[in-house]
Image (spheres, one colour):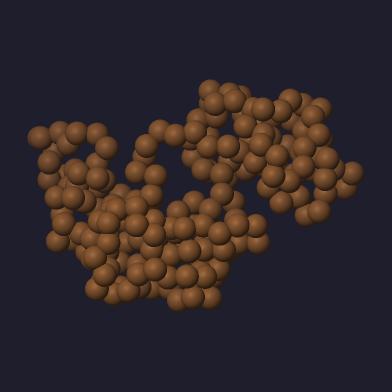
Length: 191
């Protein structure tokens, strides 16, 4: 058995969200992807699923707490065979077996619900502070390029200011659905 830290996944640029529901207790046996907590921002609620099956040994947040991406929310006791198989995406190379096991421990700690599966997500215009119909003035990345979470995708301009739109998570940009000169508003899909 080994201990795994369960953390808040990437929140797509949102700084802090409130814990509004805790669906687990110490001693609960849970399945992978089972809801463990529910978070709420100004705009939406988000269920945080368990990264893998196991037994809850510690709950580190309470209803009303403010959390952000990477905040530790619970400790999960897992079967070490299960942790290895779900945490390692590529096959383990036999000669380096011991080194790989030690090196993968930190990766297990930062596991997120996505399980490194390839998937497409929509990129939407974030909160514009009440501004509407702002101009797309510049692209910071081209389709096909890789990008880190929070790195600038494009630049918007209103009457009063310019604003960079950050990537909600690390990945590869497939396409933009807007072009320079287009007008966009909060919530519009841009890529």
